[in-house]
Image (cartoon, rainbow, N blue to C red; front, side, top):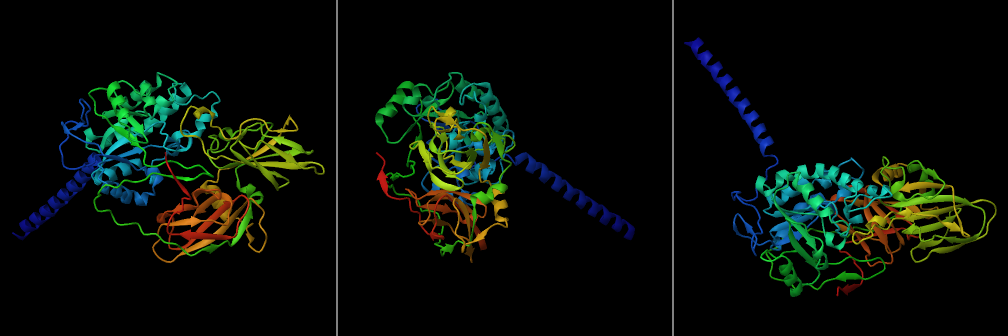
Length: 566
């Protein structure tokens, strides 16, 4: 009896072990099966979003889209949920977001879909909060984004024709979509996900250089598994040439005009009338006023908790490093008989330079008139033997160079001020020196060219340099400046203010925060709390011309003097 009991006990333990093992394996299989499936509500999935009459339907019931745009790549990941909850609190039920190709593929064949660029995580988060999604994957997105989201390495091809069926462009689109679309296909409504519609390209009617292009993009998404409702998006004029068969046309505008809606109904009768973009703001230009819209507020649901801000105590610059001393920390310079534009420099694994500054240096032996021939994109600080002489840009194209003894070094620090995001000049957005520079009507030759894109690797190398100088020594501009911000509690959002500085770039803990310029209108830079940590935080500033040695912090932004958008 005792032996029988022991056998039963052993069998029982073995059975429990097997059951536990089966449970674990089953759980793993279930996770693998459901990892790409997202539960948005408890409704059954029979028929997705349809536009077969004058009203949208979802599951064959009338459905009204109340959408808003929040771009994951513009918001710190730690704040995604906060921003989506605020959007939902506005009474909206649908999230629209672009996908920036130039961030996801910064170098040809190198793809990033993690951390801040984890699109799948963002869409799953939206689903978990009960939001539907309209995905706008481009490849062109406009979005007030550099080159409309197209990677600058496309411009290395001197014959490139962006947003056309030029093979050099379509091959690159195919490669990008091969990586992108497979990630979002499982998140479609028909597969249990939040995506109820997908936009084909963006505002192509305002470009419209190739009638075969929109059908190509449509097929590019369909052939990779997109099966939800397709949309296009254009302003009124663009509607004439921006649509594609099989996609619902939607309209964009700044102000509601009933005639625009009527026009949409005329060209697309018996279909839902949808405004894809109803602009609630406008962009600013350096040296201009801050553009605002007057807000007519409707009663809103209770808002989520307000994100606390803090005005940290001012910090004082501790040390500085001249640009000229920092040059050994850049990539290997290029020697070239003639100027080479940013995008065609042999840097970043031969993908060229996308952003920042490029330094062009050559030898001169006479005084005279320096003429840019309008080949500077976009703004150049001019130096002779490291002495600042002036600025060349699209307004000022000539500069007098003084006499001097023997051979001297002419340096042009050229800044890429940003590529246009909209219009028919996308193919012309190469930066740096895009042609010859003349001295006394003769082209200059034999350049040494250095890329100063100020990526994290460069900034980190600078921080470890032993050449930083004490503030007791007068700085030589342009220069990098370092200070330490001490945070003694959980970091809060703040705004950097630099009233005693001229123009440059700010880095927080190695992260490029953005540009500042005293001409405004914007006078502050937003510092998200997640970029800071308890204890010492490294603040580095690249300043072109002047500083008072202090960095201020504010609990509120200063956008400058305002003007109503007309």
